Amino acid sequence: MTRKVSATAPSKIILFGEHFVVYGGLAIALPVEKRSTASVKAGHERDEPKLKLKSGEMHATAWPGGRYEGEELMRPLAAVYMHVLSKKKCDESLHAEVSTDRILKGMGGSASVCASFAAALCSYLHTKCTNAEIFDAAQAGEEVAHGGRPSGIDAITVIGGSPQKFSKQFNPLKYVSEPFNAQLPEGTSLLIIDTYKGERDATGDLIARFGASNGIAKKPDELDQGEREKLLMPYEKIVNKATGELKKDGDAEALGKLMNANHELLKSVSTDEIETARQLALSAGALGAKLTGAGGKGGAVLALVKKPDAGKVQASLISAGFPCFEAEIAKSGIRVSES
Image (cartoon, rainbow, N blue to C red):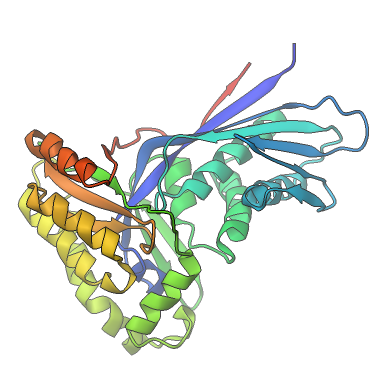
């Protein structure tokens, strides 16, 4: 019987902190039970070692020396493969398959896929990987997916499977992540709204747009303390209040207003579709609504609703052509199984 190792990882949403986290602001991320799954097993090839990848109708092949053939969307997985092989030798051909639940733009889909594949590959090679090692491998794939080194908030959240407070420190550069016992106020839930209409903006372009709209022409690590504080001050007032409401007995209406206030600071990376979805949700009874992730074309929206109103809000959005679903906060991160 062919041995197969599978691993699964959740996706994530950023509740507060998009774009501001790039400049040192505090971000709050929650893992969500929209998962990716990766499986690894031995290949049938008896020639040179290689990795054959499959995801739906997409195929690719990667070789230990760095050669790659196939769909560009799967190239991040080849980067994960190369990273793991730099730590662990593999002389056999492998077959890997990945699949995902409905993970929208802004929900950390690439981090979820890369993390699940890294965990499955390490486990197949009988390597006991720590979360830190899976993080490093996932980040190798994320760097290819995003065209630059990402902050790591996505990978940390999906691997650990717990809400996180995350921030970026400068001089020296350091990323700080802290598990956070965040809970929604009792009787509320979050809806995740899909605004995709055939186009998606690149994350890098949106980061540049946000900086330009705030008069920033420098790279984040080139800003002096005064410039950074000027950018972050309005946002920090919001997130500091929000952390106090993310508890079972928190004030749901206050939290909704804080979400709205955070969105107002992100208008430069919003779109007509995002604004329409927000207004539909708010008009139907949502307490607050904001974009999540980088924003832009195809970006997702979060809406805080009272549970009795959730159906009405969903119906209003769906009838207007905006699919949505309730966010189920994940209670675990990476899970590995063998068959």
